Every structure is written in C-alpha cells, then in structure tokens.
Amino acid sequence: MRPARADAALAFVTGIPLASLSALVAALSVPGARATILLIAVGVAHLALIGRRTRPLVSHAVVCAAFAAQTTVTGLFLVLPSVLVFPMSLYAVTAYGRRAVAPATGVLGSCLVAARFATDDSVRSANLGPNPWLLLALLLAIVAAAWSMGLVRRTQLAYAQISAERARDEERTRIAREMHDVIAHSLAVIVSQAKAGRYAPDHAADALSAIEGTGRAALTDVRGLLSVLRPDQSPQPTLRDLPALLDQVRSTGLEVNRTDQGAPRPLSAAAELAAYRLVQEGLTNTMKHGGTTVRAAVALDWGIDALTITIRDNGTAVPSTPGMGLSGMRERLSALGGSLTNGPAQDGYALQGRLPYPETS
Image (cartoon, rainbow, N blue to C red; front, top):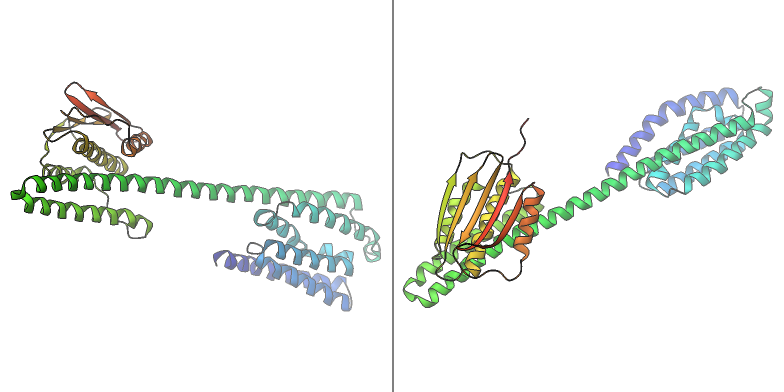
C-alpha cells in the first residue's frame, strides 16, 4: 500500500507542472488535432508512473506506447518537459522489474527518436538542433545513466532483503538457544524433583510444589521468548535474577554456593542475559551429569576488563559430547566478544565464561 501511495504522489507531483508546461508548449508548437493526440499521450505516460513499482513492466510498456504515439505525431515532442517521464520509467523498470528491458527499449527508442527528429519537416522548418548523431549520443547517454541508477537501486534493495533475512535467521537462532536453555534447565529440575518424590514419599508434597513452581516459571519464560515475535516483549532475565535461579536449583537438593569478587560493573542487556544463561546452563549440566551427592559453586569475578563466571562442581561424570547448550553458549559469548571454556577440573568439572565490559566513550 505504501509503495502505491508513493508512486501516485510522485506521478502527481511530477505530472502537474510537467504536463501543464507540456500542454502550453504543444499548443504553441503543434497546431490542430495533433496537439490533442500529443496531450493525451503525455497524460497517459504520466499516469503510467503510478504503477512503476507494483507493475513495472506494464507501466514501462504503457510509457513506451505513449512515447511511440508522440513520435508518430511529431518529432517536436522532444521539446516537451514531459519527455523526462521516459528516463524515469527506464530507472523504475530496471530497479523493480527486469534489468534487461531498459537497455533494449532505451536503445531502440533513442534510434527511432533520432531518426524521426532528422526526417521531420517541422523540425527542419523550425531550424532546431542539434545534429541527429549528436542527439542520438545524448539520448543513449541518458538511457545509460537511468539504467545505471536503476541497477544501483536494485542492488540496494537486494542487499536490504538479504540483511533482513539474515536478521530473521539470527533471531530464530537466538530464540532456539533461549528455548533450549529454559526448557533444558526446567526439565532437569522437574526430573530431579520427581526422583526425590518417588524415593522419598515423605517429601512428595514439597517435590510436587517445586515441580509446579518450575513449570510455571518455564511457561513464563517461554511466553516471554515467543513474545519477541509480537510487539509486546517481556523482559529477559539478568544477573539480578540469579538468586531466584540458585534457590530454584537448591530446591532440587543440589548444594550451590555463590561467591562474588571485585566491584560489579555495568554490562549490556545482551551480556546480562548471556551471563544468566551461562550460570543456568552450568547448573543444568551439573544436575544432569553430576550425580546425587554433588556440590556446585558459582563464582563471579569482576575483573579489570571483563566479568569471568565459573560454575564448578565436584562430580565425576562429564558430558560425553558437547550438546546444543554448550555450543550455543559458546557462540553467544563469542558474539559478545567473550569466550567459553569447559572440561574436567582438579576437583570435578568446570565451565568458565568471560564477558568483556562494554566500551565507554
């Protein structure tokens, strides 16, 4: 709808002054009925510009037909200001239609116009220049300029489309990572609580309550992620939400300690989310692979130029192959200029991520 309005506005803005001046010139230069035919063809050419984006080939065909009619009437149509409609149509059909059409119609039209100009009695009687060969060279130069500008616009539109597609792909990948982090962590908590309720019936009520709370939190997070696809976006978790995450993990029976070193520094929103997801991923892996008597420790080291987060446990089980969570987390941190390392540590297993602080001007 917007392109159609823009095209109609352009046709109106360019059409009123150009058509009015062309009507005056035609009435003074071409007597009789030929002036009426010339003016009708001029009006049709201007109106055809309305569809220059939505139907570029049809629009250009109508413009060509209108100028063919003008050429048949008189070679003096070149003095009409509305002749500018033709290079505008060449530009439009190149940018929004087929790029091979403009050179073909432009070169053919230039040859026909130069020939008509050279053989028209009214042109010779009016003693108008320039030389037909010079006129042909000028017309071909205008065609080349219009075609070149159309190609530039076509390239810009193609690049914008590729950029939009890349942005959509990146957003889908981001949402997939977020969904994995949320669902994997929540299911790990639910499975752990279900085991506790199964083997310790006395604590079944507490386990079911924890499962219900975890399920509600996961549902809220998933809704927040899906809201990215809609205008109303929900806030994403940050480091301020870490205490709630640790309490949720502790409710499964896993002992988790947190230590902070250094003065906290501001992080970007993306870095805050990545830090939260890093802790979530590390603790989820501990619950899945660490065993039943494992202890975990989360350490936040606010260094000089970066925040280093270490999630360490004393378990002996190590993930056999890196899953989607770790690979996605590595890509997430890398996109922020950080890094991720993981592997067996002296007392168990460790996951460590580094997030640089944002540059300040």
